[in-house]
Image (cartoon, rainbow, N blue to C red):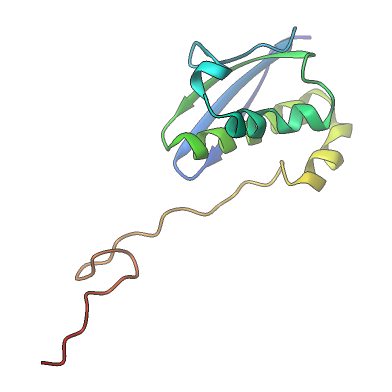
Length: 128
């Protein structure tokens, strides 16, 4: 099997993934998964598509993450891994879609409006 690449996005985070057959090693920006995401919850989020297909120790994953925060990055990585797994075996798409791993979460931060402290918050009204 040659290298399969895929792209995942969430908020302003972008994840590029390169999947090859291997032992289950996940490297992010030349660092180990546990080193890059110390939180167990974020590590769990990243491994969800692999766990669903019972392929945790079947593929080596090399990822390049840019932009966003750690939550957005972990979810972008999850989408990229799911897309790469579907490129490898198209029959897995139904199982991944039922869990919601194939859907790109399109929510972005709303822009701040002029004359307001935040996007929707207004300054306190004073009658007098």
